[in-house]
Image 1 (cartoon, each protein chain N blue to C red):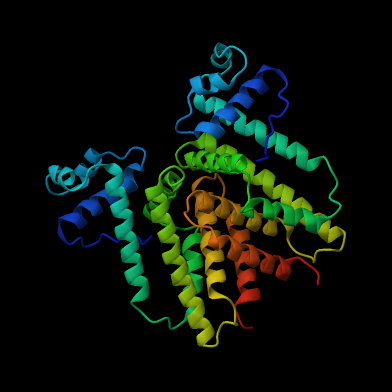
Image 2 (image 1 turned 45 degrees about the vertical axis):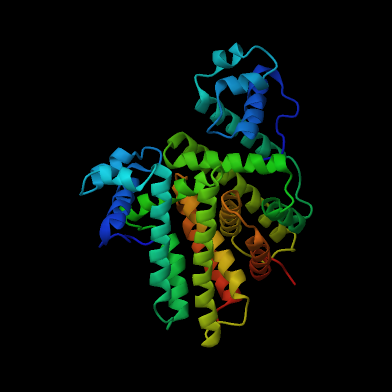
Length: 200
Length: 200
């Protein structure tokens, strides 16, 4: 869920996945074809066919790569300001000024996630993805408790709640005409965090 | 989002919509065909074609009918016990023992909602649906404040938050392999309501 995990692709696999990412962002899943991915690819499109059997195999590998990148980025630094980090995580999902490219990508991720209703491989991916995000949020909460800036609480419970809430937020704004509710939700998440986590 | 809003269909339109509902619950959206709806219909399937131009027109009318039924049921009685009513609303979405038929229907509603990413008519429906649910929750909160059992707060903000949270819960469990997070979320929603609404 980073903005561009494919900025500097290394090797053919990453180049193919970068092309898949760009094609997904442009066409969405429903209109995605191997040929559209080939159009985004700087080498011969036949290389795509040589490496992947079909669209879902490619998309799932692309999702998996993005998640690994996110995970690597999130775990490679110390959490020096837990409250700022937690607020940045929440704000990421609530950002009304989200850049159009990221907005399209989030909608595509929501579209892909809805495939998990009928496809176990997508369900496996998004289950793992939720676990990665939850572990990240729980780490932030744990750091805050250790550093004395958050109150004692169950970090896993807070993490499950924030990840579920942001899943709802992103699903809702991807499928919704209005955004007035977003400001209401922002204030109430703050209320929840004040009640659970923040020291006065 | 009631369990069976089509228990006693009155007239041809309602019979067609009842057949659509049963076919959706059995096949999901992707595998839904007018012919599958015809199979669920007790009169001549040609009547379906006479009333509707295609699958989406039928599905959208079915969604709209279900929402009207829900709205009528929710507004026709007084809210005598606001806390119990609010808890029932939250529990409805968090119910791990949800009956299989309702579970399939919720997954289908999530699948239909994801169509709103690319289809404005579905976006219109689910925007309206969220508004109906929010108005219902806000009415409960307002009753609780008037009766002195809830603290002063902004009923619309609480409603937007609970509806978004339950949207996240239902999307997550429809697309997820595990359900351990559900109990975490239940406890934290309670924490939020204790902090915002409930008097000690």
